[in-house]
Image (cartoon, rainbow, N blue to C red; front, side, top):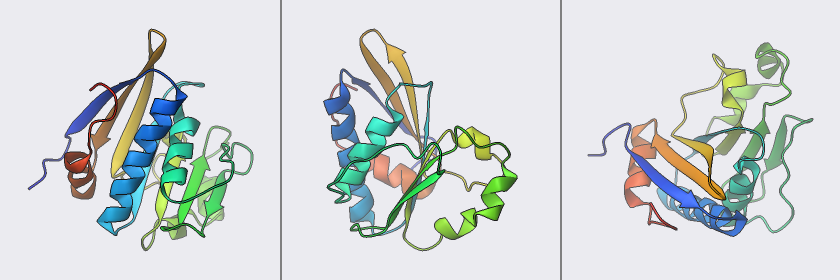
Length: 164
């Protein structure tokens, strides 16, 4: 049985390695055949959107992936697994999420990526995986931490990409 709270640490030297890790996460999300909620946190410019791009590409998206800073959510409903990319950086009040029907996005087998999740605290479900970014030298230190049994199972299957 998976242990809650287990984590994987990576040092990512560049955008290509960040995208590759995102694609690897997506591969395991697809294999799990269930929905996933992923929180991405870290300062501006740390790689959250780059990781999101890797995940979306791993789910089958071919076009551009941008951070939906002004629209709050970007839907990717035509993928192998329907996905929604949230950026809550400009969220004025967490109650705004209620007005947009936030709970509906987390039903079924959807994948939800949430940048700046602390801005929606109290209205967001617990994440299956939290992905935390910090600057480390010329690269990024990334920690993936399981918050649910499904998240722990995914991390247990995650192949190492880069250095852990």
